[in-house]
Length: 278
Image (cartoon, rainbow, N blue to C red):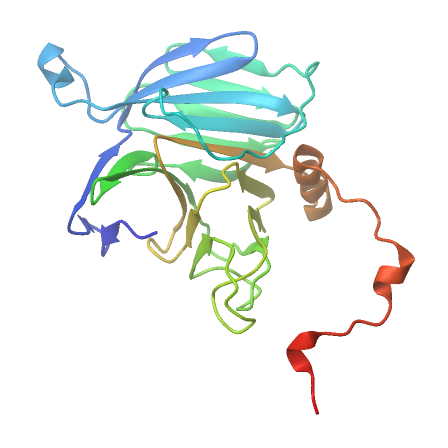
């Protein structure tokens, strides 16, 4: 979903509160919680008309980090949710020193700048995969309806794949993709089997944990960003690292589940009523 009018302006009817400053970081045995304000706080008067986002980082298993961006945590969730398999014995490494805060799960790390500007870096075995920059994390209202979004940088030559069954180009760069199952045929942007997971050639995968209409802008709203947004007051996603695409996909399916092997007879003759003749 596009919230911008070009690069500098918001569309008419859209208001946005971007994470500008990491005001405070809290550390527990299992999580890192960062409170991000919508403007720099230098005095008490800066707390007027202020939006605060709570961003929680946890590690459900090795080389996976769960990110939860929350504006209002009291929202009643009426829809079904994905069943996620985690490793209860897995414990991340968390560090805070007043200037930076980081959480490491195996070889995957997220490191955040405390203070202003809002900035974070994802690395795997010391290699930078992507970053979170200014105007990335935000709470927005469009026509009275709330949304939460986040963005990751899209590097030069980086390619994005996945997002379920699609009938367009295999590389998703430049596309706007709504995760919304529709019976629209096999020759349009609509699809029957949408999956809110993509794989980047930079060396990571990302799964947005929402059964609602997740919207991806892959270099299509901002040419150097991958944006994903959901309606409501909270956004949850999993950042997945790995040495190879196969490793990343295995970790993703380990989270969401793997289907059983189909019976042999299912690979036999198919007859479709869509193409009957006289």
